[in-house]
Length: 228
Length: 228
DNA sequence: GTAAATAGTTTTATCGAGATTTTTTTATTT
DNA sequence: AAATAAAAAAATCTCGATAAAACTATTTAC
Image (cartoon, rainbow over the protein chains, first blue to last red):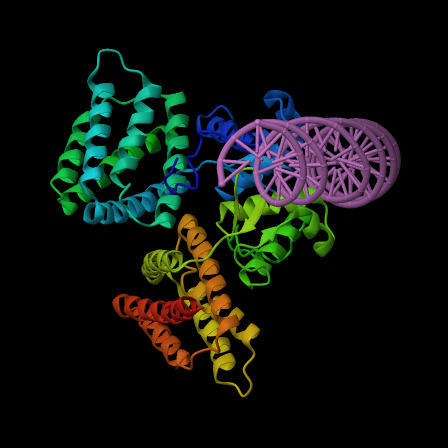
């Protein structure tokens, strides 16, 4: 772990109990196991996770800063609410930041970056075109692919904010997947276009394709959320 | 306080001790009272702030998420380090976000927004052209002015990220002010140009002026940081 | 001179009790 | 019957003491 990735997405190798509490709570909220608006009673969580109140409260505090949890006065913690407005806001901001990161990455990306992109795309392709579809595996490779594309961007703050929005959006997607079956669309083709534009260093095409890719995902999520 | 400003910058009306600890620690780090890289020993802070370990740890956790504090493995909390690279990163990102927010604000701002801008500019002018210069008062009005300009922007996430970067940058400015005397420049004129462009709804001019305004401040801070 | 072992310090985590606040229930009044 | 007020219950927040784990520095042995 020689890279400078301080945070977040360091779900790997949690050392302290606070880190464990943080990683698990975060995953459970994003994964929809803790539904929106649900009360997060520390006493209750203690039994569920087998942890003390201190690491749990600390983890909840960190999640508050990231907008996954809200805390009102003396009324304890709650899972952040969801709304169409919030989803739209997240989508807009994510597009803005991701396009900026992509342009930077395209300018700065060296041979090593290219290799990483090729490898990440290859793994994603396998998950998308294979016989049986493993959603968890695909999700991880999808994330890896998009993350790799912007990995040559030299702005830690940009990547930090982007990572938060990516996971915020992922929560919405997971919520909508609980309600409705995934809409069939050729995601692989979208990824292929993004991949080709990236290797061709065609920034404008890359941005256009990425934008419609994100927008398309968000629109489906949005539709499910509206019906709910 | 009927606006939707959930956070941060809600230094006002802290209810719980955690909120108090958060507000005070944040202000002390931004104000440079806790210098960069300084160890933040909970035992020590307990005596200084007269608070228990629990609210302090929670506050430090939240500040970690905002990048004001870092925590390494099992080695406790530290004030986040400073570097020219980090300052440049913050400056770039702040410009990106502030310009985006300004354009949105200009499009959506109604009469009430205009009034707020006029009032904020008037108060800032008084602080900038008056006889004796009160730095603390000026700083608050400067913040209020810039915040008011983007207050019609409808994106909570944009404002949230912007607020963090604004305060991050403020920390750097305060650090450089501890070393060197403020460089004389006509800040008031810069503000005047921004003000006029905003009321004229001239988005391009507003962005150009704001960008050079931020860039100029950052450059001075940067120079002091390099000499240090 | 290097490496292992030890002692001391720091940090992290747990527990339980007490103070404060919110929420629910019950009783009273309009 | 609805509204208000008082009382009880529940939950949250906070603290201090303490135990356990991890890191640092020093000493000791080879």
